[in-house]
Image: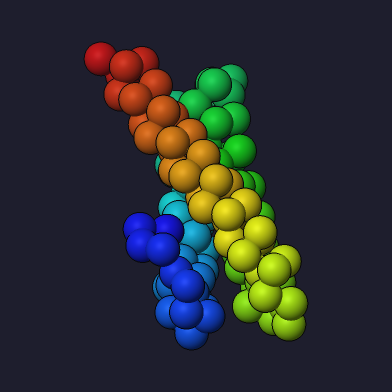
Length: 108
């Protein structure tokens, strides 16, 4: 998260905001795989497809982690889950950008 979230109410609001973002990015990753495969006319899958699917899976994992962290009553485990959520979200976003670079490189 961008700020140190000591207040549980602020942490909950930030996680719920991140939940919608992660869900949207998971859908975008799946849609991009479909668009890439439609455009190639049945050509074999590339590394970019696999990376996009892995990033979409990571974003889906973030959605589940946020859901469980929001519903968790223990503050200590919620803070640990928040750290895991940050790492998985940033890793998934990095994979999505990497896949974008690979797609652009293969098209040029």
